[in-house]
Length: 119
Length: 516
Image 1 (tube, each protein chain N blue to C red):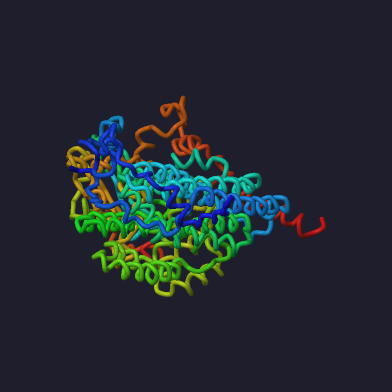
Image 2 (cartoon, rainbow over the protein chains, first blue to last red; image 1 turned 30 degrees about the vertical axis):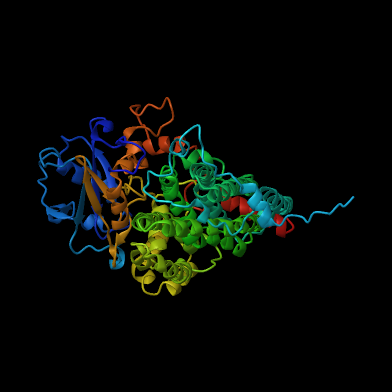
C-alpha cells in the first residue's frame, strides 16, 4: 500500500492539470544565479510558444540580475529533468512535448553570478 | 481505641494507585475496536506493563507544580509589560525573531496538545496514556503562555496580529504546518517518534533553546521567562520520547526496521523545519548567541552523536540524512535568509541586509563559505538598496512536494548547484529538494500527493478573498494574496529599513532615555 493507513486509502491529488484553468505548470531555473533562490514556477497555456516565454516572460523574472543583459538565449544550454534538452523556440509547449510540472533549467556559459559566487 | 496515624503516600505509591487497573481488558467490546489505532502500523507490543515512567507524576502533584510555575510566569510578564520592557531589547529588529516564533512555532504547540491527547487515547497501555495526557496539557499551557507573552509586543509592533490566521495560509508557514499535519495524521507510534523522539529529544536543543537564549541575549525577559517555564516541562517530554523508542525496540525485534525508517524520516523533516532557526540565529538576532554552525556542532554532531551511540545497542543507526545535514552547516542559514530577503514583500515580518560589521562576524564564523558565496550578494543588495532599487522577487518559486520549502537547497557537496530530484507517480511528476524528501514521498506517495502547496494553490485561484475578481482590469495577484493573508502591506512586510517598527522604536526609546 502506498500509505500506511487503517484501511484502503486514496489521497486526493491536489495539483492535477485540470485544476489550473487550461494552463500547465512549468518550472524554470537559471543555474549559477541563486539570487533567484529557487527555480520559478510558471503557469502557461500549452499553445504558448517557447520563444515567447524566453523573450517576454523570463526578462521580467530574471531581469534584476546584472548578468541578465549579457545573456544570449540562443546559446543557453538546457536541461529537462536534469537531462540535456534542446528547445525549438518557434514551437509551443505542447509541440515540444512539455508536460504539466516539467522542470527545466538553463546554463549560460561564462556567467556565474555576482563575482563568480553563483548568486 | 488504637488509632494509628497513616503515613502519607509517597509519589510512587500514589502513582501506582492512580494508574491501578486503568488498562483493564474490555469485555463488552473487543479491545481492537476500543483501540483501533494500536496495531495498523505494524509495531508489536507484548507487554504494556514494561513501559517505565520514571517521573510517576500524579495529577494532584502535576496541578500543584504547574500552578506555581504559572504564578511566577505571569508575575514577570505583568512587570515586564508595566515597565515597558520591550524598549529594553537590543534593537527592534529582534522583534522579528518573535514574529517568526509566534507564527511558525506557537501553533505547533497547539497541535502538539491535540496530538498527545489523541495518541494518549490510542495507546492500550496505562503508562503512556498518563504521560501523554500530561504532555498534552503542558502543550496547551505553552501555547497560551506564548500568546500572552507576545500579546504585549502586539500592542506596539506590526506583524503579530494574525498569527493563527496566517499559519494556515502563508507560504513559508506551510512548512511547519505540514510538518505537524504529517505527524498528526500518522499512527500513534509514528507520532511518538516524530514529535516525542525526533522533535522533543533530538532537535529541541536546536529549536526551542536558540529562540530562548536569543531572547536572553537581546533583553527580552518575557520570552526568556516563558521559555524557562516551558523548559521545565521538557525534561518530562524528552523522557517520554526516549522511553517510547526504547520500549518499541525492546518489545519485538520486528519493530526495528519500522522505527529506523521513522527516525530517518522525522530527522529529515525536523531538520528542514530548523532551516528557519538557522537564519534566525545568524541573521535576525541583533546580538547573536552563537552561529548556527556552532550550535549544530554542539547539539547535533556531539550530543546527537552520543545519543545514537547509546541507541546502537538496539541496532539503531544514525538517521540517513545526518551526514547530508552536517555537510550543509556552512550554507544553510545564508541560503535561507536570501530566500526571505528576496521574498520580503510576502512575509509578515521585516528583512534586511546585514551591516558591514555583521558581514565581518559572518565571515569569521563561516571562513570557508561566507566571503566566497554570500558576501557578494549582501553587498550587491545593500548597494542597490542605497540607490532605491531594493529587490522584491515577485515571481513565485518552485516548492518541494514534501517539506514545501522553496527549492533553494543545494547538491550535497556543491553549494553552487540547486538540488533537483523528482519522482513519477500515477502519471504525474513530483519534485523534491533533496534525497531525504524524495524518499519520504516514495515511501508513502498517497499521503503527499495531497500536499497543499501554497504556490500551486495561488495559481489555482484558491488564495484570494471571497468576491475577488481576478479578471478585473489591473488585478494584482500578489496584493490579492497578501490581502487574503490579512497582511497589512507596507507595515507588516518589506525591509526593516524605513519600517514603522524601526521609526516607533527609535522614537519611544528616545522618550525613555532622553529629555525632549
